[in-house]
Amino acid sequence: MTEAPGNSFEQRLAKERVSLQRDTTNTLQINTGLLCDLRCRHCHLSAGPGRKEVMSLKTMEQVIAYAKRNRFATIDITGGAPELIPHIEQLIASLAPLTQRLMLRTNLTALSQPGKDQLLNLFVAHRVVLIASFPSTNEGQLSAQRGGGVMEPSLKMLKRFNELGYGIEGSGLELDLVANPSGAFMPTGQEAAERKFKKDLARKWDLHFNNLFIFANMPLGRFADWLESSGNLDAYVEKLQAGFNASTLDGLMCRSLVSVAWDGSLYDCDFNQAANILLGGKPTHISELDGRPERGTAIAVGEHCFACTAGSGFT
Image (cartoon, rainbow, N blue to C red; front, side, top):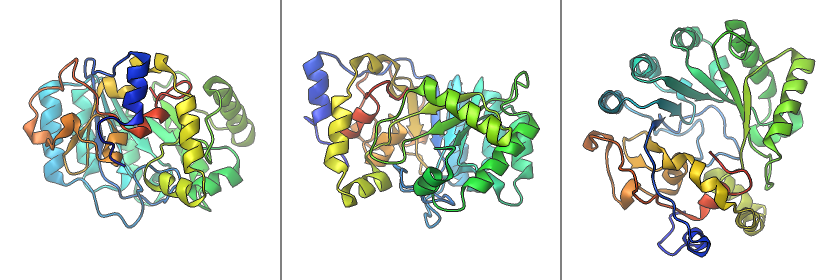
């Protein structure tokens, strides 16, 4: 879904007389690969069990070297399912001393597989912030988005996190949840959704977490395929465009983030990675970049950017 110059998002920015430029880059996002144990309908990267694109040890070492040169305030490890990537323990242990905040995005089910205790202990030792995908407290809605049989291992893993101290007040171990709508809908209000999630999880299963983040689904990858096959693509894109909110631009994550793909190529964000819109419009490898992307440079945009600027935005 690569967009040529003159796409409708650029036209909307011009109409609003605003621009999208990079601020200080303080976050390094690392996509370790497209391997995942699930095939979630909303996945913008089309990650799944059959994907072979995973970050090699050599590329990990190049990422670590880049992080040493630049010392980002936040490092965000994502996927796919990072828990399934070979050498993930070495990546975490090497990056933890280099940043104030090391985050890892988990789908919960991958960590529930046997043999993950060492990884869990590593999270605790380095106080890794865990961002867990948990779209709904309703089993039917969860299964529709992520597949059948997902609720039980997800709850089991949340319980294990709580036992380790994650999500428990005063522990210093942060557990946040991320939810996306189950279909071609705009997300509900985040504050109300967080209150409901906390109430439901505590009442039904005595589970606890710190924060809930709820975002619109990206019209990319597997979700775009579903939108098209279900006849919802045009209507959904129109909803995103109608929800454009210029006040979200200042806080967009692409303004302060550089994203490195599993093969070491660089992007303004993970969504541009899915859309194959390269950082600066040309191929650049992590080993070729000494410093951070310069402040004031333009952010590459595409039609999918409406999902980040609709309603409360994607910050």
